[in-house]
Figure 1: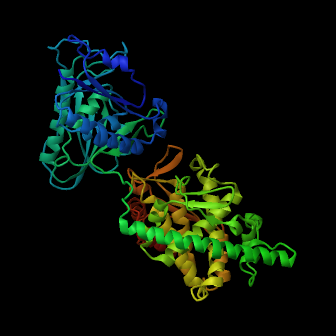
Figure 2: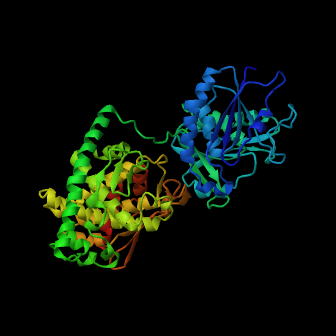
Figure 3: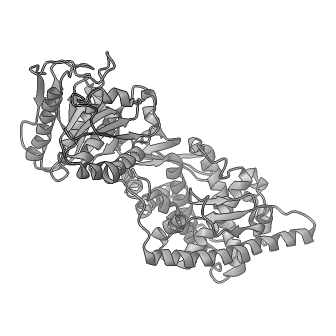
Length: 591
């Protein structure tokens, strides 16, 4: 044997080097070997519901493509060994990345003896029973594939999460258990049986949309099962994670054939445009935005009294609705960091897209600018408006106590962040209107049109960042609510009853309370998320608390298709969401 390639796939527990090295044949002296560690933080199985499987999926796929596969190509005579303490979905995904092009010897951790050593006789067999479909069906349908080796799976629990019409196939050991596999041949035989189920689906259900794979198997067997999935033949396989502390206990976390969204490469032309944009932004921020704030500060000093922020921004109106509640405590523009704002040439600290220093210097990354370009195109005036609103928004967040240093884990407070974001959004839009009246008077001549276009730019800017979410089937609760709020505000401003600037400010002063029901909620990596798949259509509803404190709630009726709103979030399609909300808005207005 020329040498060994050892893969340690670690999520739930560390695998010491000495434990795996014991499995090598050293009859001819110390063998050559190379160990690859696929590992981030070790977590408890009780916290699997908080684990970011999508991020780990990208990480292990990169490891496979950039490090492991090139080493295997350079050492074709090395034997590959797999040791895993990963989750079932991640083990399957890694096996899928590996494919069938290279044999792999898989080891299992014996749960009772806590060793990777095999204990069986090569002649032992493990009887298994399979149930494939009995007839062919050409139409579109989902397939539930139930695989049982370590413990039986409850059919009722499956029906809680797979609500679409589906045919069920199954493969099960006649006797399940944690340590039933005693030799590698038994693993290989069971993995082969698993592949026959996939073949049966391809042959008898050619129109199948998706295979819902719910498996209770050892980690190493999950890896082998993943190697049996042919990307050119097998329908998309959605792998479910079990958690005893969550209800429902099963949750789809990975679609094996799905390629997660990753950051696009910035072309040379785009890079040149970004640099031109950056140069313009530097002058704009320091001369116009900071200059506008400085002028407001000078005016306040001359008057000898401090005005409410709305009086300072829009001095020609009354706007009583936005002078009450928490609105009255917001600072005027001059009371923020903006009079001293400058743009740094450095982006060293802008890992999250931007950073604001204690000297009021802004760092904005090229990737941040590129993200905005993805939705707004190379339209410099729109991009500048988007950036101004962003700068206004973040300047108020700093006054609210939300800075680069305090934002860690803030996603775990979705209601607080939703309120803070709404206040900052409104404050930013009103100041963008005031700024445009000073510097782009013709654009601000029609207030109704201006606010409608401003909300559209704001929503497109928000989508630019949600486009990068690696799992399109989930979205943060606060992000979903933020879109619902602003598409609803857009409809209220578009309504014929909203005519004047006073009407617009009255709309903005009352944050819409609109909510969608019927989506499962989960916590992951310090975020609270809606699942955008696996819902029951009949349970979807929209509810709205109107200013008269009357609760309006509608399911699908009179043209309203709430599943289209969910589909809009999955597809990152604001037009689809807005269209259905418009139907709901007209239904309420009619009442």
